Length: 180
Image (tube, rainbow, N blue to C red; front, side):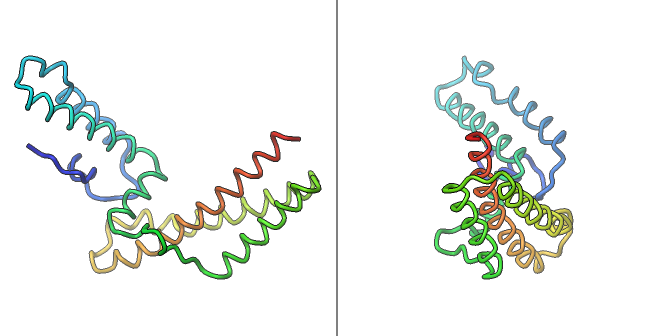
């Protein structure tokens, strides 16, 4: 009985940041039918428990692998790259984010639609630059030699952490928009 907790292994797929969603969906539905507890109602209680565990694993794997952010975090966690306390980012990026956060604090005190729009544009420009920079790394990861993958994973980790910062700024801006 396959009881792996590696979602890619569970679906018999290579670890990739850009899986084919149609393939994931078809594997999910096939395994959903195979492991559905209703089809094993007359089996032993141990077998029923195994099927329930596999059905749960199938659902969790599908949810994680079909969401780009969750999938990225999952892969980085599989490689031990999102451990607490090991989240250092380049100083220049942290300075940019600090400046944006300071502008947000000023906007909290003195709302200014034009300034809010500037912060939104700066944040979006940073996000777009990040996304464009990481796209070829994500696309090429699966084809990289195993000894080169750690460098790519470090780049992806940095991207992921930066994206989290920018997401918080986007969320703050959304709160401003709903208030005005």
